[in-house]
Length: 221
Image 1 (spheres, helix red, strand yellow):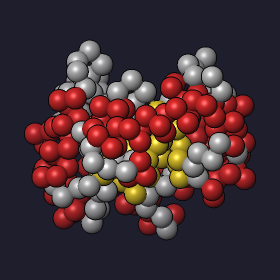
Image 2: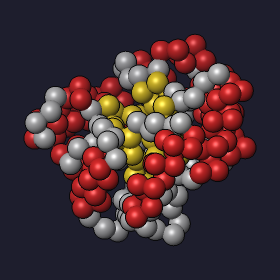
Image 3: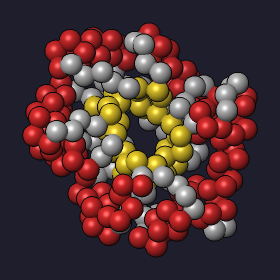
Image 4: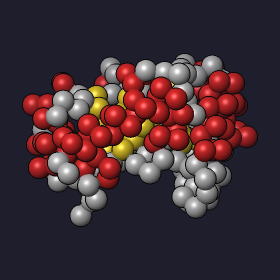
């Protein structure tokens, strides 16, 4: 299957899932996860008209979008969907339109300081460690309300939404439902949840952004 065919297939599946949730296809944003994909595959995806991409690492994204595909940069939305170190905050503010992985006060402070230097603060999502897994980043659900209150009152940050990666070994649905509940409780309307294997479930439970990699591009080398 070509990349163009794969994208059409995913968009059709998004439309069906959105309808099941009483929404329209264009209520859902498809984020093409381009991390570790070849330039040839990314070029092919760009040529389909795909305009939202997700990258995991600042340095890899800089190489791709500030250099190789710099002529496309103003035509796309670029989202950081991997963990962000505080010493990369300035670079991240300069490059990304959205950062989905705000997960600690130290990073919030670094982003505010970086925004003062760059004149730009990307749209921010809070990453939630929805399964409370030791190896994963994110704010645990019990601490989320206080964390968002701190962002708003201490740093003047108004997050746009929440992001999560459910535990791989467990059913994703209950974790997506919990993220939706947490977002509603905190007055947030955007939910980045669902990947290649579970994005349809995520949409039916309220996702507004789904992050799809291998189902779009094929398996990474």
